[in-house]
Amino acid sequence: MDLSIIVPIYNVEQYVRACIESIYQQGLDEDRFEVILVNDGTKDKSMEMIANIIQQHKNITVINQENQGLSMARNNGMAIARGEYILMPDSDDLLVENSLKPLLKNALETKADLVVADFLIMNDDEINNRQLIYQQEFSMKEKTGEELYMDDLKPNHFYVWQTLYKKDFITKNNLKFIPGIYFQDVPFTHEAYLKAKTCIKTSWLLNIYRRGQESASNLSSFNLKKAHDFCIAIAKSWELYKNMEGLLPETKKRQKSLIYISYNNFLYRVLFKLDKISDKVEVLEYLHQLVPDIEFNYSIKQRMGNILYQISPSLYVIIQKWMWSRH
Image (tube, rainbow, N blue to C red; front, side, top):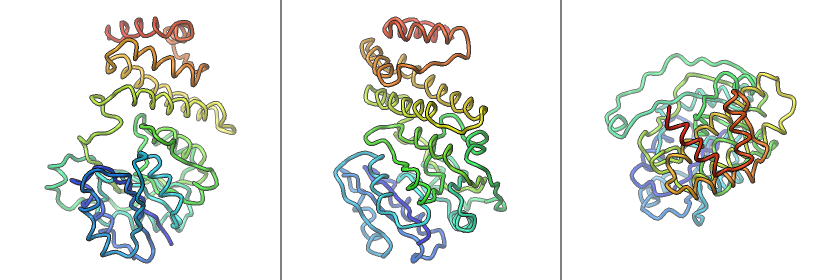
């Protein structure tokens, strides 16, 4: 089997049907791919909305589980996937019509570890009123994982759904999502890019990302749970930075830089989106507990911040918020 498409489903009754329909608008032979729907204990009518689609297609497998979060839904889907490649679209997004076939063809021919495509961002109205999407002529660049990491991984764009992953690559490197947390894409993407040997990068459009939906990256929904989860994601990325050997010096520099951008994003949210000082301090103390040696030395101000962070997280919170407020 060529491909496994894993779709976690949780409270997306308004969008899930369009997502699944888009999978069957790819011109693929249904004997060559499977669709794994992971019902993550959805509380709405998501599964009812696609019940007839499930009945119509013999290549659909449904996993029903108690709510365990997006990470475990994807992990459980990957555990039973039979395809040579794996794709993990979000259930409130769509695949561009007839976009997957050339990507899969090139993946199977090159045996690349990763095939990274491009995407469009649209809101509900734009999706509902869209015309036929124009694709440029298919072209691709073969890269190493390090080259992909250096050239194409954008800060805060750790999107799992734009990539075809070779199943054997995932298995050999024991790549899994951290259970039970938001921001699980961040450490997974870092590790996948850095461990990949052969990759394909293309500007070919694969996904339509639905703008405006609730997500881990939504500032207005940032809370104490997400703050703790962000700590775990940063800690995992920092651990990879310390332990990943054999990378070029410029790759290590880029790796640390991307972690710093995530850390800066995290710090802003903690300082301005958590209401209680006690929560802000607790979160920073938790991060310090997870990664006591994390530090960034790009400026004198940062070096002073490192010292203050080590001595007193509470004082660090007060001074950092004052400094951010002056910007």
